[in-house]
Image 1 (tube, one colour):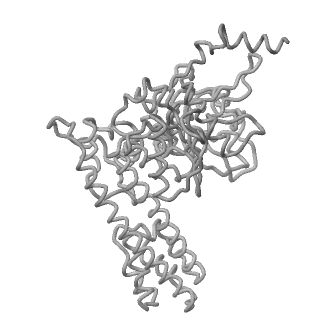
Image 2 (tube, rainbow, N blue to C red):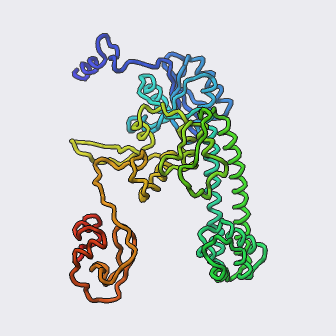
Length: 467
C-alpha cells in the first residue's frame, strides 16, 4: 500500500509524469551498435515491433533508415562502439536524421539487465527524456584532415618497428653502429646500412661515408663496424631496410594529401603575413616537410607556434582533433574537462577519496601533455604564459646558480666519500680522500649556493646539510 502511494506521488496528479521527467524528444530512437547486427528501438505504438534487429550490411542500413522514416523518428541515439558506428552514422546523417553519438560510460544500464534488446530500449528511453549528451564530433573537413593525420601516425609507428628490426640485425652481427651515432636513420646511418646491404664489409670504407656533422670520428665508427657477418642477418637487415623505405614513401604521400586538404580551408589570416619564427626549433625527424606553420596560420588566423612548448606539428595534431571552432566549449575549463585533464573528484562524507583523471584516449590531450612536458625543465616555464604559468599556491623557489667547478677549499662534506650532485646543476663529484673536510665557513656556503645548509636541505631533501 505504501509502495503504491509512493508511486502515485512520483507520477503526480492524474497519473502524469512530473515536469522534471517530461519527454523532450518524442520522436527518438535508440540503436545498440554491433559488428554483425544492430538493434533498434522506436517509441511504442509506431509499428508492430518496437524493437527490431538489422544486419550490418549496407543494404540493411538503408532499410533501417527507411523503417525509421516510416515510424516518424527524427533523432537517433547510438553508442560509440569501436568503429562499427561510423557507417551507420553516415547513412543516417545523409538521410536527414539528427544523430547523437553517446559515450558508453554515461549510459550504463541497471546491473543484471544486460542484453542487446534492453540496451537499445534504455538508449531510447534516456534520449526521450533528454538525459543524454552528444559526444564531440568535428565538421567534415576537419574529420578528413584527422583521418589523414591518423593514417600518417600509424605509418610512422610501423616504420619505427622496422628501425628496431635493423638495430636487431646489426646487434646480432655485433655491429655497434647504433651506439656511436644517435640515429641510424640519418644520412650517415642510412648510407652505411645501404653499403652493408650492397656487399661492402671493409670498416674503413664504411666509415668514410660519415657525414661531417656527425660527432663521432671515423676511427670510432670504423671500430663499431667490425662485425661478425652472417648471411641470414644480412637478409634480415635487407628486408627491414626495404620495408622502412616503403613506409617512408607512404608517409610522403600522406604529407601531400594533408597539404592539399589544409589548402581547402578558408583563409582567416586577413592577408596579414605570419611574421618571423618566434624561436628556432629543431625540426623533428617525423614532422611533415611542408610549411605547416603557414597553413595553420591561414586556417586559424593566429600563430599557434607562439605558445610555449607548441611547435607546428603539435599544433597540427591539436587542430585536426578539435577543429578551428572553439565556441563548442563555453570556457577553458570545459575544454580541459573534455580533454580529460581535469581531476575527477570523488567525495563521500566530506572527504575526497579519489581525484584521478578519467581515462581518455584523446590524441589532442596526448599532444598537449607532450608540449607541457617539454616546458617542465625549461626557462619558459617560469614566464607568465598560458602553458607555463606558475600556480598561485606554489611557493616561489629561488633560482640556484650554475656550478662550474669544485675548488679544494670549498668541497662540501656531502661530496666526500661518495658520488653526489649539487642543486641547480647535475655535477657529479667523487672524493679522492676519506678524511672529513672539517667545518665549512659561511663564505664557502655562500660560494656554493648563496643559501644556508638548512635551506638547501629544504629545497632538495636528498642532499643532507653540510657539516
